[in-house]
Length: 229
Image 1: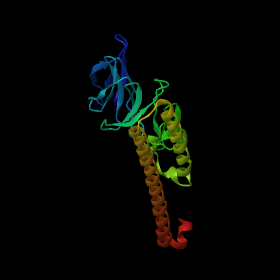
Image 2 (image 1 turned 180 degrees about the vertical axis):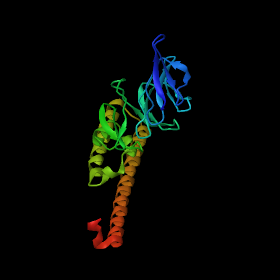
Image 3 (image 1 turned 90 degrees about the vertical axis):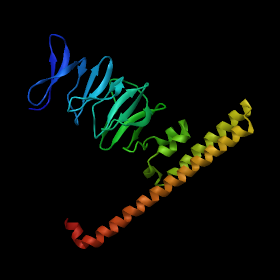
């Protein structure tokens, strides 16, 4: 039999029976069934993951979601993060709108919210949805964008966002009396961000070239037989 989740009606505590039907200690305040090798359990006011050897994993979280495609969402320090199966934390921290609805991966992406902007992330924890809005909220986040979005002139739109950002900063500088060092730091930030855009664009171009070379190899390998495959 598989590992089974049970509830003790006398104590209202949750417990697991192993594959031999043996009750495994301890009991938990709340628990959910195993998903992808881990079960979410709550004890002493904190959430953990239980592995199939019945060991608690993780640092103790405010809330957790079930594992999905190799990652589980955890609420910590007022934000959502993801942990992998080694319980290494990933992501910069995503907005919690509803603690009862943790984000999850499906088809290699997850929907998250940050700075009030709904977006999507891939499994490199790069953004590829509503990126212009994300850039307006924080231009430094561009370094975490999926390079594939830079195919088709997207970098030009981002540079417009950066120009607007820079102009707004300069307006604030005039009002607040920024020092020369402050302005140099702003200039340096813009140069670094623009360099990231150029790097991402080059990466996207190389990815497209690699795909075209693969298509050519595929055609040479199968020739006309490709259509019948």
